[in-house]
Each structure stands twice: as C-alpha cells, then as structure tokens.
Image (cartoon, rainbow, N blue to C red):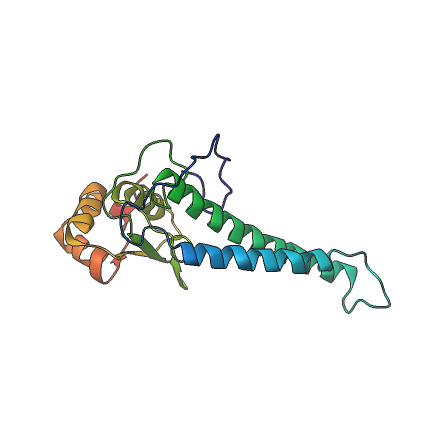
Length: 194
C-alpha cells in the first residue's frame, strides 16, 4: 500500500457502470460530492492568488504570498487524494485503505477505522472517514505499531467477529484485545512488530 496521502496511479480503464456497494454505506457519495465541490471552489480561489505580484494592490510580501500559496496547494492536494482514494475504492469494490491494492479486498468489516495516539495528540490513522476491511486494517495496524511515534492504538466501528479477526492476525492476547477494541492499547516493546 502507498502512503495514504500520496496520489494513486491512474486506472488503466474505467468500467462502463459502477458496481453496487458491498455493504450499505460503503461509499458516502454525498460526502465525496461535497469534497469535489469544495475542491472546485478552492481551486478557483487559488487561480486568483497566483496572479503576478503588484506592490500597489498586494497586502503581503512576495515571500509570504509564496508561503501561503504552498500551504494552500498542500491542503488542496490532500483533498484531491482523499477524493481519488474514495473513488478508486468505489469503482474497484475495495475498502478505502486498500484502494491501491493489487489484490482483492476482503469483504468483511469494510468500516473498520484505526485511531492512533502519539505523545501529544490523537490522530486518525488516515483522514476522517477512511476505513478498511479486516485484511487492510491488519496491514495498517502493523505499520502503525512498528512506528515509534505511535503510543496507543484503538480499533473503531468494530463488530465482534471483525475485531477478533484483526486482533488474532496481530497476535494480541485476550487482555490486549480488550484494550485494543474498547479503550485503546498502549503499545509495549513486544507490540513493535517489524
């Protein structure tokens, strides 16, 4: 899997018809449309910002304008990648975590979401609303647990069988599973898988 904030490779071809969702609520098309609308508005505003510098009308220095522009481009790229990952997932019938996977997605638990805490804050493993099936959630959890910056990890939106499957694949015992599914598992050296 690629980093979840990196653009995906374009698809070789596009199907004539979208497949039906595997589960109710797999892809929130209204949410995607909202992201697309905001992206279009923001890009229109960005076009105005890249006009040549005019000292008579500009309120900030060229350096500050460049810095602001870089921040805005980064923000818009994140939105575009979010939209791209969700569209790929919908079209290829995969979970969002597995949108760039070369293998098929497992169909169970396509709504699982990892939450991770570092030393100072709680952060979603990926941006809000990005969810995975059991197989891709296990992959993401392994990478997260190996990351020294991760301090605590919690599996959200879980059903009993799905949570047990993820926990078992990670090799967690009963006490660790209870924390992983309910309060968040504080990572110890033995959890730091490679």
